[in-house]
Length: 362
Image (cartoon, rainbow, N blue to C red; front, side, top):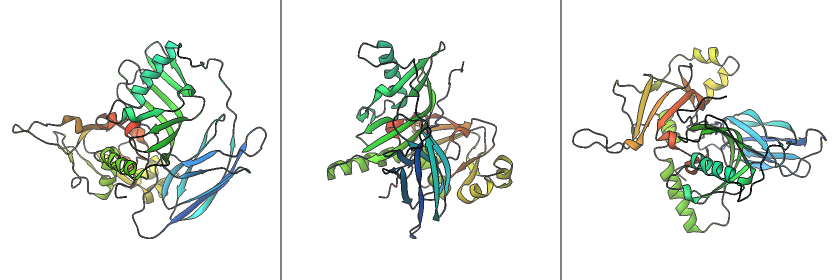
């Protein structure tokens, strides 16, 4: 039986790849085939995407797929189709080139304990309400978020109040405030029904909502920028660029703690013996100078030097024994589970999240 989560750990696995700011047009092609594992017949219409992004495609009638992207770095290539278990592959996108992959998907077996959702199923309805509060949140845009197919969700509550969530098919999320349709493959989700803390690991594929008016697009752009400013993505991007102080972030730990560059590159060979070379090429290494570092955004002080907007504070500490963490230039952690948050970033829920290829300047 798993213990209760005391701290929300953001494990929403938007798997990282680098964001190119150069004028040079770079391209990397990913192609391959998707088949049924048992029959070896092609699966048309399967979604193939880089998790956490708007980048991807669908398989053709012969099960083939191909797409080209101008982004670089590590990524999670995901294949998903209704009625099948999803599969993923870690990929490394270089400045140019190509790679081919073949996936065999296993048909999902319907569990006997999966519950048929009806309006009279009060236990499921209550679990769904709690899940929505935990997953979507109660922020400014939460009421604009619709879960299109909640019937795919199954809830298993343990005696200690821990609710484990599984899904029979990808969950479709419509965010009308940010203008996205999100296809989410639920990998590992659990939360405490009493205090709404927990953790989730999902693969997500973003697409802009279709047939939008110019006014709607302007509203989306403004809302996206509002969500981005002060977010963990904004901070880590600016940290890599060295512009975090200029962009409104500050370190407020009393002992003077901050996040600094980690100088010893040899730690990569110790902790990632098979990946150290590409990680060194595509990621920056940082460390917390204290056991807990406080990061603020747009912090204001009153006449007595008290913080007027404490909701803009995030308390960061290590979640494991690794004394450093890796960040790519798109503001993504190589392993989000290395850090844990209390405060602002811990409150970043699905209604506030942007695709990892979001560009605030466009």
